[in-house]
Length: 280
Image 1 (cartoon, one colour):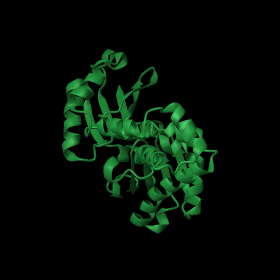
Image 2: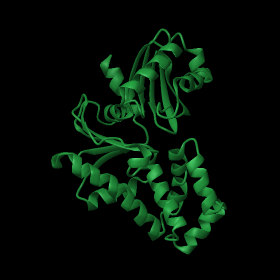
Image 3: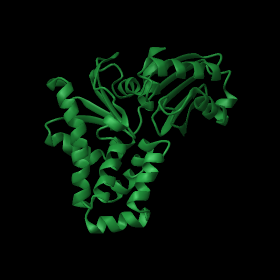
């Protein structure tokens, strides 16, 4: 049996490949920057499908946010080896997982837009260049938490039109100070900010909201223009909940910047299943 995981900061998508077929399920996100090895083992230990097959799983391919750093990779590898004692465990970054799932063995720019964001130039085997992932404080342009940050700033600064402010208050009756207190005392502030994305998506028919989202994506796409060769800016593929939910305006913004997005997927898992099937 093979177990393949694509893990972000908010949720982890798993595919268990059995002789009977593929079984997909989700758990919470397992980002080593926020969750220790004990949290990863706890999530695995409480999922019945994994528990039933602990000793039958022979390969684990885990692609995770935060796993582009050696210390984090080592920690997650040890946690998974402990959870799956009979498996060959391979841990890689979520960016490599996105690239393999989106491109298989082709070249291009692979991007993730979810709670956080990342991108990399893929040569069909490896990530050969990438924009440094600076996290939710210094980076994550175009991500869910970037959208939430822009929305919350506009709300508190009274830059948001009155009709949208009224709708926002209906969902979030807390005072601005209370929202800020919750943000700065939240154990996962990036997730807190990203949770405003559904409100943004719901009101995309409002000009203020569509312009804000376009500007947010423009900041992300400008990074691609800065860091990658011009000839590769017409072979861009993205994955992640934010990329998928806002795909129409994302594609429009890219076209306005003379860039071409060739594919957007909610998750790279289907492609990763193909990739690892071909590699066996």
